[in-house]
Image (cartoon, rainbow, N blue to C red; front, side, top):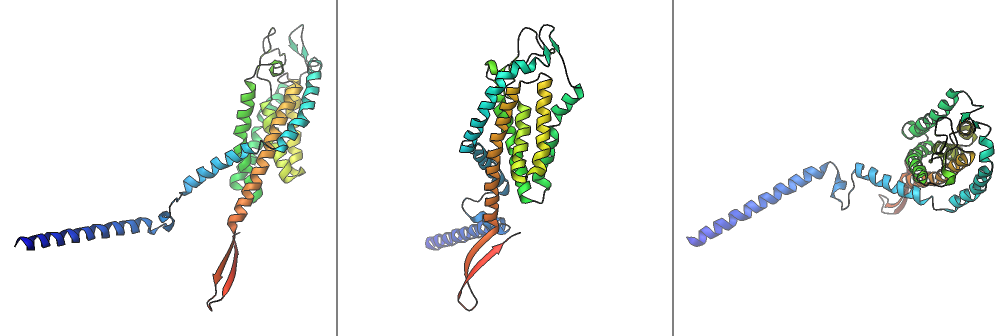
Length: 284
């Protein structure tokens, strides 16, 4: 009698364990039925892939700054910066009267206001191309541009923390007549507009480079005339923007190559007759 009870309990446990395994198997099959990829080890969700790619692109963008192109930009900008420093005082004397602490020979204030806020127009238009453009190059350039703008801003803000003579803003009637303020080196607005001008000029030629170049020249001239920046600070800001433009352009090339690699697929297969076949597919 005892033996029968032991056998019955053993059979009951076996049935229950099989039932639990069956339920777990059915539940797992239901969870993974919609997406078989989730069964793979190391599966990344679409949202996770976006974040991963974004972090990767940020690292690539800033890594590209440490390149021979950046060194050439610095080498070309430095003599211009020194030349600007040599004439800064004489040039500002055309727009500021030191004994009376008065700005002179000023353009209309609305010109300065327009130059200051006109930067938003190319940033919004060109950056939004990352979302609406059907041209892959323009879309990827817009993406790299939007990715680069915060780092251009961060870079110029970091440099502005320095306090040496070249960082002093010009004398201005709207500020102290006894002490110059810091924060003028480099020009952040000039860095951003030159970043856009160089990046889109490199990738799409004069049709975008010329209009953006005119905006850059207008902005630089307005800021020098209004005693917002010295000429040397405008040149330094332009150099920073050009450096990031080269780095962003390399990022665009890498992303386009990455997309082409995913679109173009090569493979080997077997024909219905049992012979080998070469497979080539391209998504467009």
